[in-house]
Picture 1 (tube, helix red, strand yellow):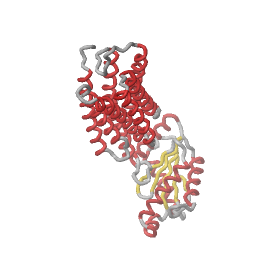
Picture 2 (picture 1 turned 30 degrees about the vertical axis):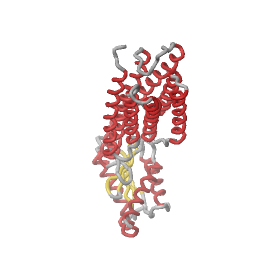
Picture 3 (picture 1 turned 180 degrees about the vertical axis):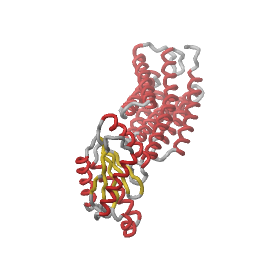
Picture 4 (picture 1 turned 90 degrees about the vertical axis):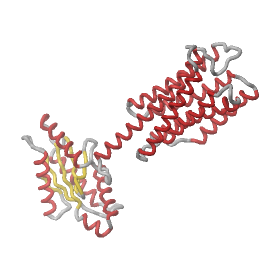
Length: 380
């Protein structure tokens, strides 16, 4: 390992980190604004890149710059990466206390650089700060629900960095320092310390790109399956879901219910109050219906003011009770203009029922509800 030049490792990894900073910045420019944290991740890699260049200039630049300023930039870069992850996962960063603490520790390091020079104390400070930031960052990433490959990679890299820092901190007290010890020592411990940090930065940047790509895929899938106005499911998704549920019922001899709901006199709402009020009425309707449905139930928008609800494992009498609760909820006054609803429902039959037959029966029941005066429930 003594053949490895630590300065070259830092320079090469710094250059790669700078390139990954540009990649993340490009993602920020092109990805939806709802995917946050990309700007902080990009800035973090840029700050780490500059800090790494200053570290590589040790012995050629003044100690204040190559030791104290570089360490401060490296700590700020690590904290910026943590802030990026907080924003990415929807947490609110507390920037002021963290920056105050990092600045205070940087001033302490200035003391041990210029006033009472001590390589050991600087090493303790650097490894301690890096270990602390890596630990809280790894905990943030690891507790975000089920682990995906991207988040597993990020958490794993941060935990490995934490382990390397703790190992270097412990060995700094147990392994004697040479009289001329310095940062670019080619001892095995120092090489592990430097290379683990350098490659952790690079691997974390890769995991950040993967996490952002995963989030974009999830958002695109959501947009493909949900109505942009009401957030109800799309007709295409509902068609697929109904066919799958019908097939499941056929295999296991179970019942399912299908409700077609149409908001009464909806055109009058648009004409009287404007299209924005009509949009609000649709949004309010979906919110009220979703509040009455179970977790397995699905609500979709078939177009305009017509909606369909799929109720798995539901018999006719149960479906009628659900439909009446929906009708009652929609007659209550609310922030949106009042708009009653007519509902037609049906359940599957034990023979070779099809999606088209289900829809036809439910639609016929809805037509009867409209013909009978609206604001009522009819079943096939």
